[in-house]
Structures are given as C-alpha cells and as structure tokens.
Amino acid sequence: MNFSLDEDQLAIKTMTRDFVNQEIIPQAREYDEKEEFPFEIHNKLREVGLYNFAVPEQFGGPGVDKISHALIVEELARGCAGVTTSVEANSLASYPILVGGTEEQKKKYFGIISSGGFSAFALTEPSAGSDVASLKTTAERVGDEYVLNGEKCFITNASYANYYTVLAKLKDSEGSKRFVALIVDRESEGVSVGPHEKKMGLRSSNTASVTFEEVRVPVANRLGEEGDGFKIFMKALSYARPMVGAQALGIAQGAYEEAVNYAKERKQFGQPISNFQGIQFMLADMAMEIEASRLLVQKAVWYVQQGTPNTKISSFAKCFASDTALKVAADAVQIHGGYGYIREYAVEKYFRDAKIMQIYEGTNQIQRVVIAKDILQD
Ligand code: CAA
Image (tube, rainbow, N blue to C red; front, side):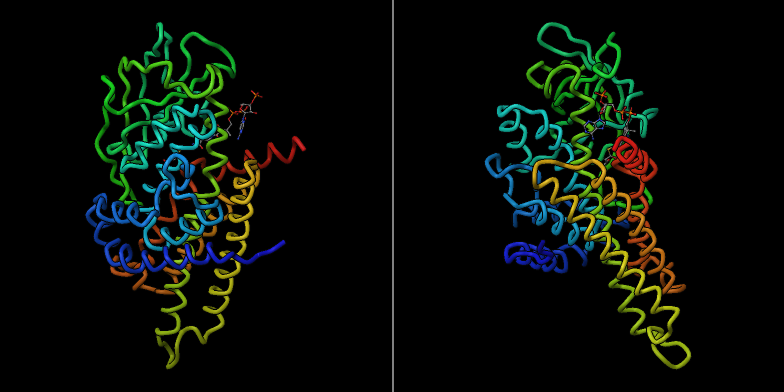
C-alpha cells in the first residue's frame, strides 16, 4: 500500500491549483453574483486539457487516471464548485455511454464533447427524484425509432448540451426490465429547454428542465438492450458519486484554508484568535475530517480505476465528504464571525455551494439506503 501521489499526479494537482488561483478564483465571485455561465473559463479549461476526464483517450479525452481526475475535481471545486459541476456534468453524461455504449456511439458522442460541446445526464423528474423507478418519461418503439415523451428537471448543463443521456420507461412494459437508456440529440424536433433555475449555490452553473414531446430517437441511439436502462444508469451513478465526494472535498479544503488564514490574522482579546483552544479544536476537527474524506474519495476512485466501481464505497465517499463539506464550511463561517456572513468573504459561497453536495447524485439519505442494502446483503 502506498499513500503517496506519483510524479504525474503531483504535477497535475499543482498545475490545476495554479490555474485555479489565476483563472478561476479572481472571477468566481462575480459569475456567482451575476448567475452567469463562465464560457471564458470553460474554454480555457478545455485549452489546458482540464475537461472531459471520463472520456477515454482514444475518443479525445485527456487520458488521466482516476486518482488524477479526483485531484483535478478537488482543486477546481476549491476554486469554484459552480464551474466544477458544469465540467463534471460532461463526465456524468458520459458514464451511461461508457457503461452501455457501442464503439460507434462512443466515437460520435465523445467526439462532440471533446471538440467543445456539452452534454447532460437527464434522469430526475418533477415527481421522481430519489425514487428513480417511478419516473414517467415514456419511450414507445415505432419501427426503427423510439417516440419519447416526458419531462426531466434540475438538469445540469441543460441549456447548452448538444445531447442528453436519458432514462425512460418502455411503454406498456412491466417489472424491472421496463427501462431504456437513450442518447437524445438536442436538435431533435420536440426537445425544449425550460428557463434557467435560480439556485442557492453553484450559481455559475446552468440548471434547467428538458421536455420531450413526441421526440423521435433512432434505435441506434439506444444504450445496451431494451430493459438494461435502469442498471446502466445505476452503474453510471456508482462511477460518478466518488467525484461528487471530490467536489465536496475541494469545497471543504477551500473553506478550511480560509478559516486557518483568518484565525491567524484576526485579533481579539489582544491576540490572534488561533491562540484560543476553542478555535484550535474546530480547525483540528476540520483537518481530520477532510483527511478522512480524502482517503475515502481516493479509495472509491481507485475502485473505479480498476474497472470495478464499488457501490458501497462510492456511497461512503459521496456521503461522508459532502457531510464534511457542509460542516467544515459552516464552521469556517463561524470562525469568521459576522464577516463570514457577508458576501464579500469566500466562506459564505463555500457554505452555499456545500449544501447541494448532500442532495444531488442521490441524497445522503439514499446513500445510506444503498450502504445498508449492501451491508445486509453481505
Ligand atoms: N449497479 C448495478 N445494478 C444496480 C445498482 C448499481 N449501482 N443499483 C441497483 N441495481 C440493480 C439492482 O441490483 C436491481 O436489479 P434486479 O432487478 O436484477 O434485482 C435493480 O437495479 C433495481 O434495484 P433496486 O431494487 O435497488 O431499485 P430501487 O427502485 O429500490 O432504487 C435506489 C434504488 C438506490 C433508491 C435508486 O433509485 C437511486 O439511486 N436513487 C437516487 C437517484 C439519484 O441518485 N439521482 C441523481 C440524479 S442525477 C443528479 O443529481 C446530477 C446532477 O444534476 C449534477
């Protein structure tokens, strides 16, 4: 067992941190305030190869290993989780294609995002969030096409995506084999995107609903076989969840760094507040919980690297790191006192951005359901 990063991983981490310090942090606050999508930052990230980490090298991806992918995501989220979530939306939409796609589908659709495009993972519906199996979007087979009807909501990158990976229910079918996974081109007739949602955090990322009205999707765009859809999407989430852990880790790390710096500078009772044990204990807890999260995230992505994403460890990583992020961000605000509540200070944004990490890609209650199911099966 070796806990150290290799030379390439260290170089990628340093390069990403430098990029984030120069290109993201100085602008993140403004994009957040304006709730504007930072195309300029996304273009620069693409230029330096910090994009589409889930795409294999032969299809145009940057060819980084999964530990490096997690290191990059952590560093990006330390700079701005809004930017990171949009970058990672391309990865999330890629996992169903990686799990169930043919070489032809990979070539075509990974080609689109590798040459500047966006994609989106369309699973959640207004009345089907945690309970995926209750979704209402239907796909009816008519000749060589599926006719798709339904509405997906809270879709990251919805407005800019060139295509969506979509889970739908096969019309008139029963049981767990009733789902089909499809790739739906944005330009298909009958696809419409709702207005951009105004959010508590991740405000520089794009979130909107997508409606499918009599959309004709060629059978060639189906991932796997009819009936494979549910498992393809569940496996995709097992690949993706450790990276939510990595994002949460970046938020926690950023908030922690702010708290340490502030505690050393801020003087009360004639001395820096870092001299007081009350503050020291908070900082020590933050450092300890961040380190524990990092180890879990790295173990989970190591499993993904081996090609065997482990559902339980993926849920451990996502759940523990996101609970840590919210706690650390809340304590970082506390250490800043009244200043922490003012929008000018970075900890306020970390706190808002942290909350969603406990909710999206499966709430932390659902992660515990997944973990408990696994433990009891064993
Ligand atoms: N890998 C492979 N197969 C899996 C699996 C996995 N990870 N999880 C479940 N399955 C299989 C089961 O083995 C079962 O197979 P059989 O029928 O052959 O036995 C089948 O799928 C059904 O499984 P369950 O009975 O466990 O299904 P369920 O209906 O009880 O639901 C759930 C399980 C875990 C609650 C699931 O619904 C779930 O994960 N919900 C959370 C949804 C979620 O994460 N949404 C995120 C949306 S995306 C987002 O937020 C991203 C964004 O915007 C950025």
